[in-house]
Structures are given as C-alpha cells and as structure tokens.
Length: 146
Image (cartoon, rainbow, N blue to C red; front, top):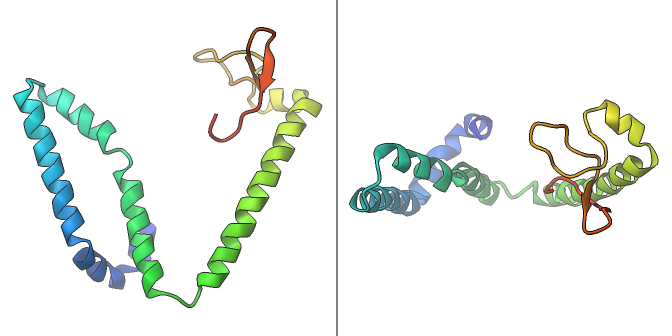
C-alpha cells in the first residue's frame, strides 16, 4: 500500500478530498466505540485489543479504495489489467489442482519441504499433507483458505 501511495503521490490529494466523508464517519465510529466501551466498564487494554482486531481489515479496505480511485483516473490500461487478472486466476486454480494431486502422488517430497504426515491439526507441529476427517479418516482437500 505504501509503495502504491509513494508512486502515485500526485493522486493522493484528490483521493483524500473524495473520501473525506468516509474518513470522518470512520473516526466517529471509533470514538463512539471507545465511548461505549468506557460506559460498559471495559479497561483500556480491552479497548485497544478491540480496536486491533475490530479494525484489522481497514488497511485492506483503504488500499482497495485508493487503488479503485487510481483505476478511475487511469483508464487506458483497463483491458490489459482484466486480461492479466483473468489469466492469473485461471493459472492459480490450475496450479492449485496440480499441487493437490502431487501431494497424493509424491508425499515424500512434501514431507521434506515442511509438511507432516496425514493427520489432524496438532498445535506446534508441521501442518499435515492432508487433514483427515470423518469416521474413517477421509482425506480432505485443502489449499490457501484451509
């Protein structure tokens, strides 16, 4: 995000001007949340933990809004961008399937690169090649969002 802002500093002023109301709304939301927490008797560490986890994804949202703002100002490269996204997603899915099949065909390779044997999750241990689920330990496909 910081790299995108640094490269596009000339667009930052128009972005901040355009997104003024959402920023003010966000600040009001934080102040309101902290006020309610004090009324409910929460201590300061609980409030900071709530802010940390409650607003964890705000930088991702702000990054997306800034990139969308840049997108609206630079229209000449849209088609190239969409083609890149399309091929990138298709390639990612295909490589994911190949990765999953390779784990069944050559599990010994994956044991050497940081996976553990077929098993359930164990805290502090290597993640298993495949998680076992159900009554008879059926292997469950897993990937990026397991």
